[in-house]
Image 1 (cartoon, each protein chain N blue to C red):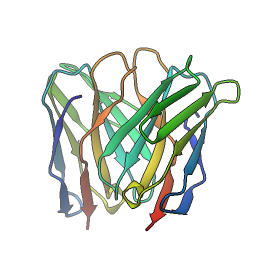
Image 2 (image 1 turned 180 degrees about the vertical axis):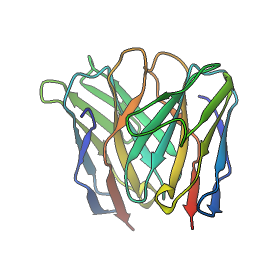
Image 3 (image 1 turned 30 degrees about the vertical axis):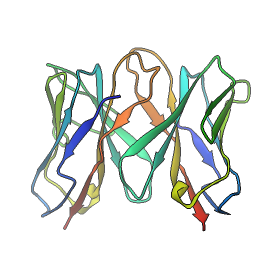
Length: 112
Length: 115
């Protein structure tokens, strides 16, 4: 399936450390997006990277995309306790339906 | 970005009954979607809500179980019919404004428990 697969499934770090999460997928994409979800609530869009882009930054977030390896990574620098959440990658394969296919997510815990 | 009001935020329902979830958007959007998130799991797309016509359902989801309406560009409802405990999940609506090359906005979700 086109579903992204995040790695690791869970990550526990100390405040101030960096957190890296990875996402792999299987076929071609239009873009790849990262979302955050706090405690089973609604998802918040973090960043979108298009298939012709290799790296994007937004504040403390850095996303890379390697289409040859069909993988992406999300780096959160100088983590804070408030970053504790589940992080999902989502694949947009393009076409006329614009639907997103989500990975299983990484649960990040940032300990104060 | 769009702002979504999703109601109810949570409900506890008896098996065999139905629940209708509403999604109201503050601006006209092109695409609206309904997702299900089972406990501890990722999001699974139920269907794309099409304005003025029948929704497009994903494999494993049928209209009789999850009827969807979208009478205009800013409003949609999802009904979970004849509920069983297996339907206990978070249901989320999602919208995107343009071509899909922008982030999607999600409602705050409806946490459904079926007893």
